[in-house]
Length: 54
Image 1 (cartoon, helix red, strand yellow):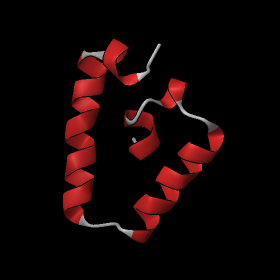
Image 2 (spheres, helix red, strand yellow):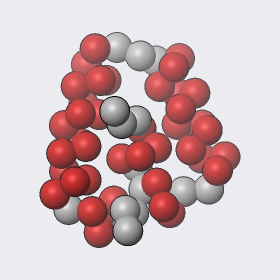
Image 3 (tube, helix red, strand yellow):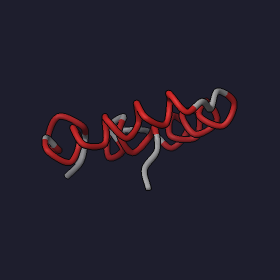
């Protein structure tokens, strides 16, 4: 579906930063974190220029 690096500036991130965000997700997973990611995904889809999506 989506992930932290996808909503955190995917096109503007270095590879190591994307990996760090993925590891953070795996180590700190909660249902609340998933809801937050889904909510931010909506914002990225509606306003892609602000999120590094081209």
